[in-house]
Length: 245
Image 1: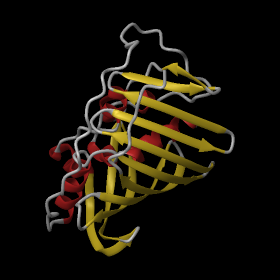
Image 2: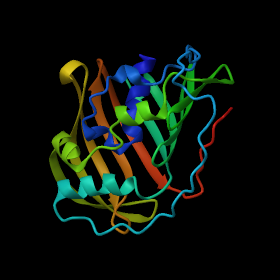
Image 3: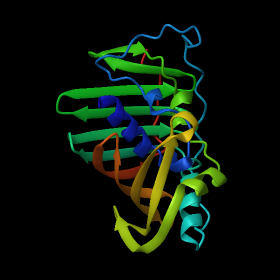
């Protein structure tokens, strides 16, 4: 169950989870309480050199068509520089508090807390680390695997195929910022030959000024677990992610 919940977090962490990635959810990082040390020679032992983070630039105006506006916002997000997500998931098994930091194109830091469980992971390019009993270990899961799983690099065409029933439902404010509000159905396809799928109902707030996602609510069911997710997204050029060891 914890593995599935981690997968759900990763799906919410990056809005492009609706990008139709065909990777199996088993690629999600293992729970911190049972994560094995990496044994594959393919995992690098030294971190790649850090690359400068470009300053965020103003996003172009959102398209008038609701579906095109959602796709544009998702793609704008990956050009806007580092961002942070604060996520609350209420499921049949309890409440989960999560934070995530993303430095495009390939750095991710996640922390997930439950009543009896805590998981922390850092992914940088082809490398990954997980914290086990307070000690960092090299993980067999890399940042590239996570990015592939959640469809971070999804194209406009693949996004279009997995977003349906789109509606523009008005405007609102998020942290004092005026935002357009959209609802849509997100279909995440995975498994052998796309045999399995997660269908979620999403409500998305997109900044009118910046053209960037600033909040989302997700209701869905996966593996028999119903959940409701509320997530706030903040863009912060000061965010950095470094190897923990």
